[in-house]
Image (cartoon, rainbow, N blue to C red; front, side, top):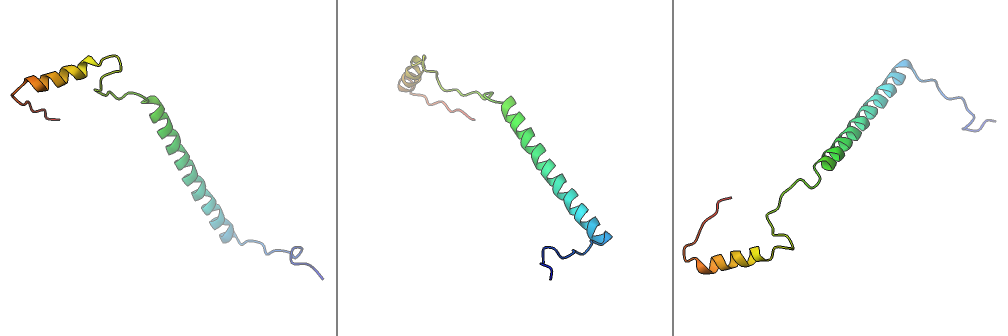
Length: 83
């Protein structure tokens, strides 16, 4: 009497072995592609960190806000800015 664990398993045919190898290659290629994309995104974000410019006044320049408000109050002519 043998247990199911100790019973001999069937040998894979060459076609089954080839399809298993093909599936393994496809999974490996997909994994390496995703890993490469994640690494490229990381390097891009690290390289371009802080390279954007804002036009907000810094903490040391409160006069710029006051000057803009006073210019709006003085001028009766309205200027248009196109962005």
